[in-house]
Length: 414
Image (cartoon, rainbow, N blue to C red; front, top):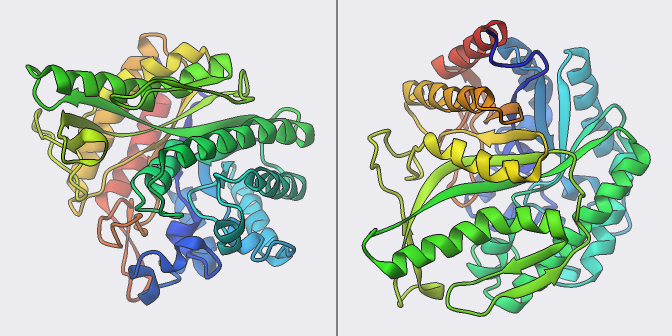
């Protein structure tokens, strides 16, 4: 009996800035690595070559993002050549019978946005919606849209930890930013459907499995419960009710109204790892985290635990939405391509079991196509199916690419 449906999306996911860079982006000078190789993989020039790799793999869908800072380098300027560039990507994909899935916002912003209207200011809503309408009205033959990639990561990195733009550590401003970002999603959902009535719109939400550092420690168990509610469940509840309930550890809950109730056509799940937590009064907000190789699957180049069973757990969490689920990112940073092969098989096996158990999973997107820049980690963590020589920009196939092509072909015919 065939376990994967005929219309299942087998794809790969990428991000524009992580492949092509942009001199107009807030990230361009944030990490010193980018000063040496500002064009990163030179994908902006070599995109046709890279898109041919998709055809070679046999994928039927490709998730990629638009680089806002290229499209709108100044508040009053649209770069029509940049827009035409992304339209050409869409046209090539269609010619290959590959369904495009377009992400409007994948972490980066035009520099002017960061300087004038960062997310905690109300002006950010009008700026983002103007950009959204410009893209949806300009680009043809796109049905699948992601408004925001990992909005919680934007908030944690930019507003709580301060490690990403705008580099703040301010809880009240983070809550204002949360409200504005999700207000943008709700309004962008309506704009997209106005121009594309049969559009399929979502966010791509990063989900993780959490565990107590020490099971016997009640404080560690409390942190695990709080993290699981905030990171995995609060967004699901908000899409069902229109209200975010934010519970930071050891503080009173905060309720934030946002116009997102029912504003999803599917739910995008990004999944990578399990995180162990413990209470540490000397850490910010009293929380310390680490990754443990408990089950012997190994750790990634970034140090994350490989935990395939966790994918099933977060998919069951997301199933409360009663919507189709698409795994919009799943991948491993590793120099060992055989470890990548094992990782893919383990996680696709989990997807297959979830389908047999009745979960409505519509797609699996491996992260990522070619080695790229990884936020704050540089160029050597190696997520790609194809290896990149960052001196010559040559792409080299690996056994992971060969295996993914085999996996797609074999599971599609089972």
